[in-house]
Length: 90
Image (cartoon, rainbow, N blue to C red):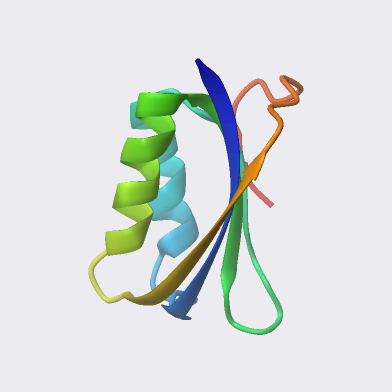
């Protein structure tokens, strides 16, 4: 079953390679979407893919790369759009 999520990650998540970590994890899981830094210091991601793959990516983002400290992850379910062909950094 294809699902989509918007994740907003807070903590020490900028300046530690978080977006590149997300890019690699998304490629490994075969999901599509994007990740970007927000001006308030959080990271936002939109992820689409099979439910199991999205769940594994969410779990990875809750850990983050070495040097990151994830304090909170807000997850909002979305309707899959199917318009993404890969996962990108914005």
